[in-house]
Every structure is written in structure tokens, then in C-alpha cells.
Image 1 (cartoon, one colour):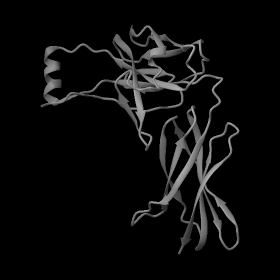
Image 2 (cartoon, one colour; image 1 turned 135 degrees about the vertical axis):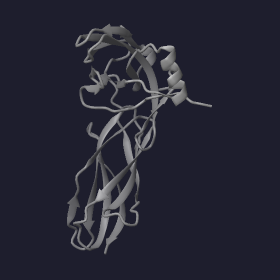
Image 3 (cartoon, one colour; image 1 turned 30 degrees about the vertical axis):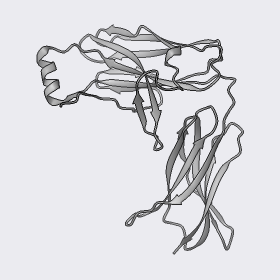
Length: 265
């Protein structure tokens, strides 16, 4: 049996994103409405094609895997969804070539909405298929839809519950690797998305001299854990060391750390 698949890619940039012939900004929307408050933001949409295009904006939910992959799930199936609080006006819009428009995104947080929640907005070209085009789609088993994803987060300004931990540092180097690799688990035990820096620190057991290496940036959502792989540069001299992975997620919270003993021959 042929299966029709829809192109569902999570690709994020800091402010805007192009998808073939249209542009959307922003692609990251952070709402900070307190319980009982309504907050408004705007989505900008531009038609760069040479013909009129109709666009639809749809809400969806997602969950995160330990490697950071975002997996789409049916709307309303996530306890962390804020899709029911979000209204898009309009949700369908038609633009002429090179025309732009502004869509209102209204976040209405209920009086008991004290926790962090999230969802996403799919902005896509609404195309009507002819019978011939539909037959070709069925024959190929694939339907590709030009789409841009807007990631939406909502956490009240009054929500200061930031808490995370780092654990399970272990080596995962494979034969033939030029650099030694180490895996670590970051767990968000709080109620806000954390944007953290994680870096390796190496202390010589004989001289106590310490080296710190460039951090990696990672985002971890509440109720979730994230596995991160860190590389140790080849420039490290031979000897016995204490290797630590350090977690820094700000918000006046103490640094987290996990450590193992390491011998470099």
C-alpha cells in the first residue's frame, strides 16, 4: 500500500526563513504572558513568487527526543501544548507577487496557566491539485509541501523555576576517530526551557593545571533530557587527568558538573 508523506522539517534560524518562494519572520516566538493575560505578537509573510499564492497557518504539537530531534504529534496530545491558547488572525491569506502581510498571533493564558508550554505553527502554500497531479502524487507515494515552521514557547514572566542537572559522563570514542568523544546527559528538572553552555574541563592529576575547552550550546525543555556529545582536542599531553563536563544555564543558578578519571597515552 502506498503511503503519502508530507514534508515536515524543523529548520530554525534567528529571525527569518525562506522556503523556495516565500519568507516568514520570526521563526522563534517567545511569549511571556502571566496567567489571565493576553499577549500579542506579529508574523510577517512575504510572497516572493511571480504569481498569487494562498497560504495557510496551522497549529501543531511536538515532543523532543534525547538527541534534540523534534517529532510532530497530533494536535492536543501533549500536556505541554499551548495551541488551545493561541489564535491566528487570519489563518488563511492570499498574497499577490511580492506582496507582504502581517498575521496577528494572540496568546490568551488562562488564570491557571502557571507553567511553560509550547507548540508550533506550520506556514505552508495551500495548493489545489488537479486530478492528474493527484494521480501523480499517489503513484509516487510522496506529497511535498513547501512549509516553514514557527516554534512557539510560552512561559509566564513570574515563572522562575529554573533547575537542571548534568550526569552520566562517559567515553563513546569509536575506533578510527581522530578525537576522543564523551557523552553526557542533561536533564531539565524545572519548569522553563533552559539554554545552556556545556564544556569539558581537564585537570592534570600531577600538576593540578586545568584546561577548559569551548562550550557547546544546548536547549533542554521541561520534563525532558538531552544527550550531548563533546569532543576532546588532540592537543592534550600524555598523563592522568580528571575530566569534567560543566553545565552553565544562567538565571543565577549554580554550575552543574560530572567527572571521570582519564588517562591519555
